[in-house]
Length: 80
Image (cartoon, rainbow, N blue to C red):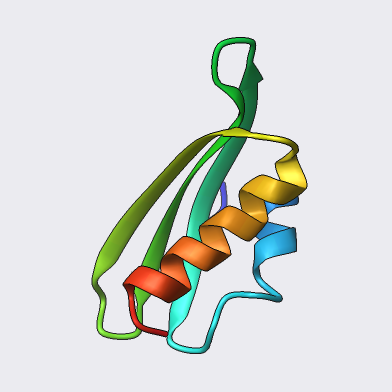
C-alpha cells in the first residue's frame, strides 16, 4: 500500500530529536511505566557511519527525564 514507506513517530522521538548531537539519529524508542521499574525507556540510535546503539533506562521520575537520560548517555558514551 505504501511503496515509498511511512514515517512513524512518537512522543519520545519528537522530544529527543532537538537534543541529539549531529552525527547521531535516534531511530526508534518506547517509553513505559511499571510499578517496580518506574518510568523507563528503550531507544536505538544510528551513527552517521551506520553503527547501532541501544539504550535502556529505568526508575526515572518522568518520561521527560527518560529523554534527558538517553541524551546524556548517548553523548557521554559515544563521545559526541
